[in-house]
Structures are given as C-alpha cells and as structure tokens.
Image 1: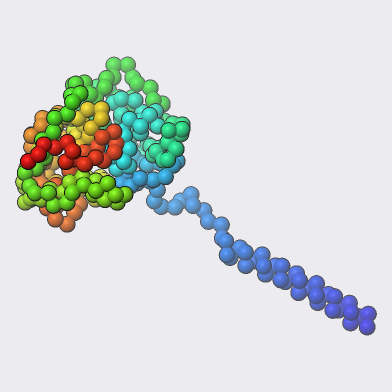
Image 2: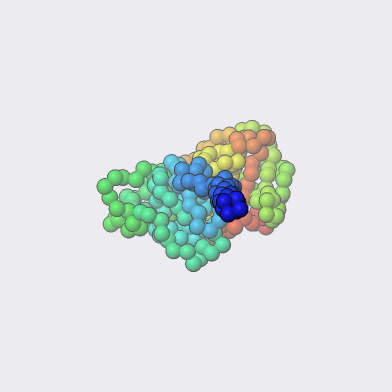
Length: 276
C-alpha cells in the first residue's frame, strides 16, 4: 500500500508539473514578443499622426508642405522642432509632428537645422545635410529670412479658375477641405492673391502636382491636381497670374482642388473669394 500510495503521489506531482509547463508554453504562443524596431511605415506627411510621432524628411519636402499635410500651422511646426526662419530642413531629418498636447511638448529632434546661406530658388526645399557639422538650431552669420520681400498685411483674393464649382467645402472631419473647380486639361490656374510659392511638387499623396503659396503670416493657398506647374519654389506671384495648367494628376478627373488655410486650418474659400 505504501508503494502504491507513493506511486500515486509521484504521478500526481508529474501531472501537475506537466500542466504548469503546458500553461507556460501556451502563454508564450498566445502573446509572442515581437521586435518592432525594423517595422516598416511610420509618420507620413500625407496624414496627421498622434502625439509624439515624427516625419522623416524626404528630398523635395518643405516645412510648409509637411505642415500643410498635417493640418497645422508652419510656425507651430517650426517652434516645436526649434527650426528658425528661413525654415531649412534636411533629408533624413526627423520632424516632430504636433499631437493633442503639442503645446507642451519639448523640441527634442536631434540636430534640428536652420543653418544656411542666403536663399536661392530651391533653398527651403529639403537638401542633404552636410557632413562634419553640428546643426542645432543656430542661424549662421549673414543668413536672412526667406521673406526678404514684404508680404501684404491684407490679402485681396481673386478666383483661381474660371470653371464651375463641382464640389464645395465641407467642415466635416473627412469632408472636402476646399473647392473643386471643373474645367478642361490645360485650362489656366491663377494665383488667388499676391504671395510667394513655398512648395511646388508632387510628394503629397492624393494632391498630384501641387502648389502652395504663402500670402502673409496667416494665409496660405493650395492648388492641386495640375497638369503642369509654371512657377518654382521661392517665386513671387501676383494675383491673377497664371501659375499652372489644370489637370488630373492624383485624381480621376480634370479639376482644380483649391484650398485656403488660415493659420494652418482649412477655411471655406467662398468666405474670401469675390462673388462671381
């Protein structure tokens, strides 16, 4: 009896041990540990991300285009990252994107840059960072603001196209943030007000060939889906000047998508454009 009892105890202990080990193994399978350090993706300039996210600058980006794509004011983006006028950014630089608590976030981006020489036509576009120098938000001797020419305090608006409105403005979260104006391929696209071109390219997904014009410290305007751009970054334009040809780049039909941003936020262009 003693032997049989001892055997039963040993069997019971063995079963308990197997159950414990089996439970541990099952836990490992249910919640595996993954290394996300090499995961693809990340912050995109074409959509807003949450607090603490970053965007890695690509060639052709400007601070204005990154701010535009993320629905924020370029000055807030510059302040958050310690980038001084004339807002030079560098390929590979990490730009912190504002989230809900961006006002209290510190500018911690490594080697934030604003060092450059006097502006050229492509000066504010992202360029390769020179090696062997520390760019830490210091403005070099002899540099000057890219807004060397005075921007108007008051903006006088004109229509950017003579075509009909095919889609109006919507303040809904995923609504149309501007006006869609119809026309034929090659129709002229006009600057809606005096200003300076701060972005000319096609890096923003969904906008095709895009122009962004800065009118003063408060207002930007954007012109998307063009067939051809007729002005370069840093060009000064006058209201009514042709700046592009209408097209269907980044969309399915020929149209101009026109937006006005006030301090980074989309506003209804009909509140500012003259009545037809």
